[in-house]
Image (cartoon, rainbow, N blue to C red; front, side):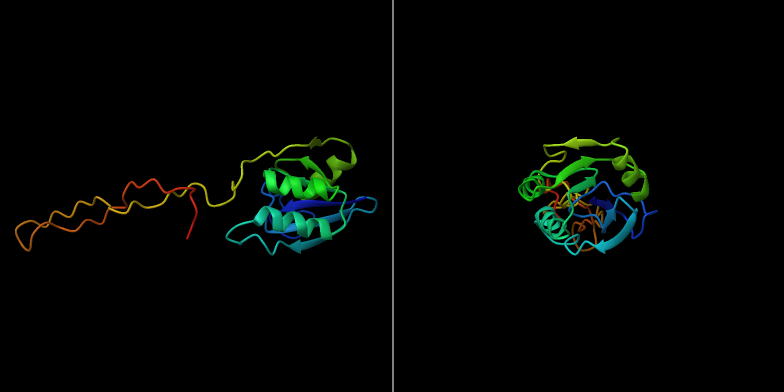
Length: 160
């Protein structure tokens, strides 16, 4: 059986990557002989649609199952339409994920495990348009110009 595992680097001993659309590599494993090939994920750095691009790429690999940590709704729908079963595995190496799959130790998932656009740089909010700095240059040319980062509420957390 030919399966695909999301990976943080190339090779069987690479760490499994919990992200689907933005993982650096897809490792395709033939479970009968545990023969593997690592393929760079060309859509990992795209500005949008990484999950769908990744799902289409995985479908072209001819695998019957995908092992990943989390997957969004669009990617899940694309993989389901291609007849690819999705299994969830968090942590460990690619080799460990393949062995767990062979032993029936992974949970098959049938619905998304991540919200839409989950891999789009969450954790860095946008900068506010009017940063409130502490300039403090009084008396010599008027009020100071602040260097503050602002407390703007950037929408979606997208990086530019």
